[in-house]
Length: 589
Image (cartoon, rainbow, N blue to C red; front, side):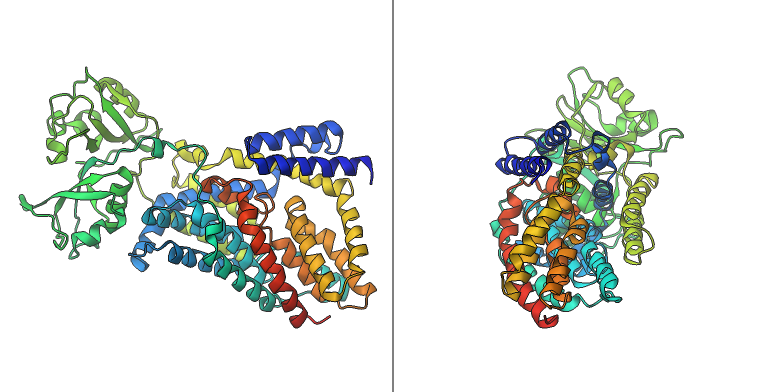
């Protein structure tokens, strides 16, 4: 081994050890590893920042933005509410997510299938009162498993087919992967459904503003319009999307109070007074298509068209103290609406416009982004720390779903590369204002993107220094002493361990020639070994850095580096146990 090869393997080994110890920020560790690699000469300084333009970083960042846009639309929540309204069993929810992602990943890019289902996972987590971490990593792994079943499901299958075509004149067809892939995917899905508990329950390392500012007793008011689907249904049906985080205080019908019993039937023009968290109130009004009793619609400005929603507390010298919103004529004077009010240690039962403000009341105001700061200053209200309040925010109907579907379909039909499809989808989310400009960079997880961008040049040093070729030679020498099933297992396992550092397509390019030459030297058909390489390269269940699906869920799930092998190592063993005999049956040696 050369000095460069020793340095490359040593740095990668030390990097993995530090990441597993989980005592330092992942992005800082990755950046330090990159700087050391440049300092010792195994990474060219001109290539040190190539990771930031790598397709994987673009795909992960774009997918985070697209997923945030779909989640913001509320459409996925409404869809789940209709097709599966009452299920709170974590295992049933997990089974639904895993099976759906697996099937979708067979026919569309696995990153697209995963991004499509992430908002539903967060909705299930809220409904069952559990952490999203229970769902996200199993979903990422199921996306990898689903890609094994077809040629277009994952990059290794495509590359292996091209290599076989160069070797024999005929590549693998679309469904040549189905027999082995479906058996492996089926076993993996069952493992994830029944052994998901091996994964520790995690929360995001940094507490979000939504979690830090926990206000659950906002009072808001909504009217039932003529087109509301909830008309003729009961209050129980209306409150179901809130997941127990809201309650109805009053119903006003024809200026008369109606007792809010669970079986009370909702009618057109009913005025409903709610109490709950902003998220729960938004879930109710969005699912039932209720109209918030804001008076009138805030006009969009010419230069700054975005409508904002802010929370603020009434201070001791505020002119609001002692008067009501109706008397203040908030909309006529300030072009703003009052959406909700919270008062500590007291339940308010007055209608929203009739509430007389007191010192310490927390109010939710809706208005133009350019107007609200001056309004709060004039009203002498202290704004709370910025967090996303969806109550009263504009929804964009089917636009986010159309954008995501277009990206997924264009990649499935191979019209454009997955990088361009998701990047264009992310830009479309911004252009159509699905995501407000102020929330764009909040949706991007900078720590994950920096981690990924810094590790890519470091991992590529394995190939640049010749370590990959050296490992291939070692494997060929070792495999020659093994029986056929042992050699096949060795090739598959080696591909699994190499793919986190070379990415899956590069792993196939390194391992496939080794596998085919080994097969030829022992008079075996190369097909079985090429299949083993494809499966091993596509099954990165040991690290977050080998595949963009694993990286995509790391931040939202709050996962640590060590969590991946905790769930993924037994799965990798299972894949080998199932795949090797299936390959030998379907592709005889």
